[in-house]
Image (cartoon, helix red, strand yellow):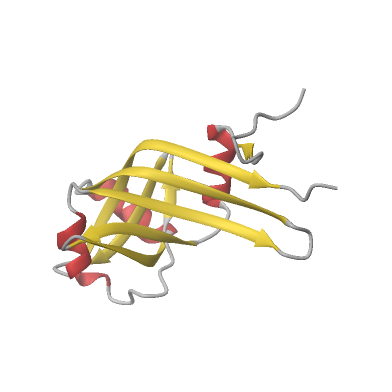
Length: 140
């Protein structure tokens, strides 16, 4: 049976595959609106169930902009030689995490390239309203 495709003939990925792909790379892109303008920033992340977790410096512009606001998180990969690739998009709201037991676990799991001092960090989870993914395969 053929995989389902979208109107552009890209393979539509099931949720389980999207979550597996989200776990496959440590760095994605977080998109949000700041003062009416779209902003996209690279973010280390981890996946807990169907939730994407990121952290930012406490008191930062990012921290203030993200609280309970709509955001998107994207992760993708492309192999130009093979003409293959995939993209996963998570859309939802950024919620501040305050559960100490989870934060302690996340601190052990997330290796951030941008934050070296954990003393003033805000952990955010993206509560997904939608997770979607597409795969590009070269047509022979």
